[in-house]
Image (cartoon, rainbow, N blue to C red; front, side, top):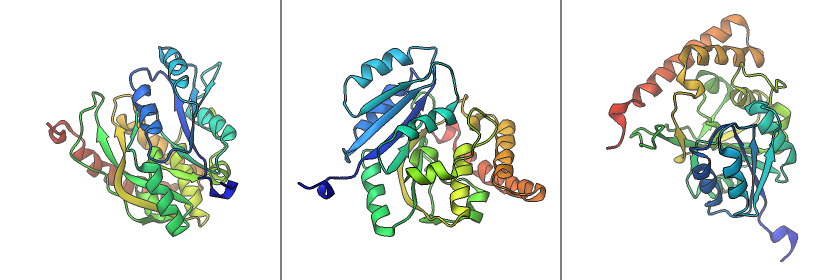
Length: 265
């Protein structure tokens, strides 16, 4: 077999801080992909619970895992960027430490990318609560999303993204160490603003965990983060608040579906 016959390597990026309750399940969902040629780069951001011990055990089970440990807590963006810097694949995918992938996620994303030659591939999302109970609602996504549409609602879930490493590096905001904006949202917006193409698979290939500690759990703080994101990508004062109003409206419709009455019994 020649080098050109080998399947390409996809680098999977997983930052984690105090993720002892969910990290094993998240890692298992990555290693269980039908597409096997992956490397999983886990960055432990100086966790204070049993996460480091669990990661040492997990990393010994599969040679595709690489473990990076921060001496000090650096934040999610810095941890993610550190993993991306060491990634060996031309294309990378992201997963948060409490989210899950369906087995065919990477395989189906590669197929769509090859068919469309798009620059970023995202998917629809299913949802669970902190205890693993499933919600009935699915967040569907359009086949394509442009810059103006994305400004009104971020349909590109971070844990669903597969993108070129060089594009992520180029368009990620230079704010490592800060925690005052949605850095992933800013990256996708910057890419689309520059003319890159994002394509979606309207199939829930990820499961997003809703938790009280998540950024979306505090609506006032989430609004401030969003406005800072718009500022980062260059929107003026009135544009920022116009699109934030659109975003809040779409967010309200979304979270009306994510209540206890909509959990599968």
